[in-house]
Amino acid sequence: MAAGKGGTPSKEAKAAAKAARKQQSKERRQQLWQAFQMQRKEDKLLLPMMIGALVGITLVFLVVGLIFGLQWFLLPLGLLLGALVAFIIFGRRVQKNVYAKAEGQAGAAAWVLENLQGKWRVSNGIAATTQLDAVHRVIGLPGVVLVGEGSPQRLKSLLAQEKKRTARLIGDTPIYDIIIGNEEGQVPLKGLQKHLTKLPRNIDAKRIDLIEGRLTALNARSGPALPKGPMPAGAKMRGVQRSIRRR
Image 1 (tube, one colour):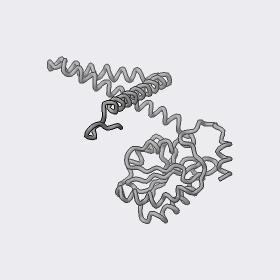
Image 2: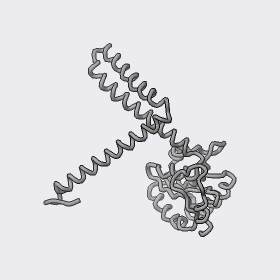
Image 3: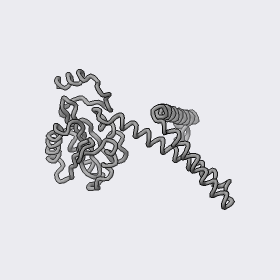
Image 4: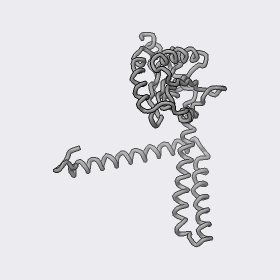
């Protein structure tokens, strides 16, 4: 950003920054509108639930306001709260729909992990098979979490091997292993983020940096090229498998 006298941003720089923020805001609104239109076509209950929340909450505030003579004060509050609840309903139903479509597809867990918020260090695809079973590593306050997606039978040995490699480098730092799935002892894709946040806090930020540095070498070893996000069911995997064989 260009600076004027005294190190303060120039008028041109301020105008450019303002225009950039305006453009970003416009793009976010367009994305939300597109998401709403797509969800509305697939989810017939979306509009009734959103409208019901908006109208119902507004009416409650209006009635309470009429009783106490505060209708002109409580009505705007009811509208704001109703709109907020309607937006929350929209967000949750979109999220549920996205998870439902992603579940069972290769790369779905990697996509969820990439969207983690907070002090998490994610390394996707640190180990994998030609059948696209994969192990991802997450470093955070709980310690090290190994997340496997694919066939549980093949993942057991893959996770055990990676857990052994990791333990050699991080000492007594806790290591958790997770298999994505809906069977007993597994973690559903939609509950992965929640499961991670519920793990106990065992280390601090400095320890996270130290562990990440020690495990960097593991990321450099050869492994299959994995998708960045969920792959459509039935997608052709020949290119990926050729890449794996070359490695």
